[in-house]
Figure (cartoon, rainbow, N blue to C red):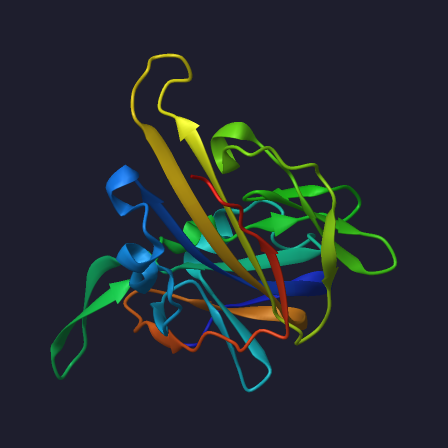
Length: 220
C-alpha cells in the first residue's frame, strides 16, 4: 500500500519536544531519592520522526484542521511511560511508550502559541518564553521572560520546579513538581508521510544539549 503524503502550503518548522516531569510529595524531598526519575534515557516513540530528510507523522495528525496550512508542528514525547503492544508477522512485542501522538500540535507563527509552560514566538528568530502559571509551575513565582532562541539543530534544556497546595487553602499536603524539557528544532519540511497503524515505535536518543536554562529553586 502506498504511503499517504501530505503537502504543506508552505515549508513547516518541526520541533521535537522531550518532557520529563516528576510530581512528588514530601517523602521524596531529597533529590537523591528521586534522582533516577529525572535522568534522561532513550525513549520508544510513536509520535513521529525524521528519516532520510523525510518527515513521518502518525495518522492522528490528520485530525488537526490546520495541518496543511500551519507554520510549525511539534513532535512530543514524554519520559513517563505507558505500555502498548505491537504485533508484526514474526512476534508480539511490548514496548514502553510515551503519551499518545494526538498531542502533537500545529501552530501559526503570526501570534504567540502556548506550549506547556512556554510560549513560542516568531520574531527575527523563533523564541521560547516562559509562560508562568501557579498550577502549572507552582511557587516561587517567576516573571515571564524570554528564555532563548530556538535554532536549528541546537537543542536546549529547560529545568524548573515549584510547589503548590493541593487546593490552595485546604491545608492538605503540598505537591512538588520538577519539570525538565528539551526543545530541538529539527528542520523545515514541505511535506510529510503518514504513519498508519499498526506501525512499530521508533527508538529516539535524547540529544546532548548545547544550552541549559536552569530555573531550579530551593523549595525547603
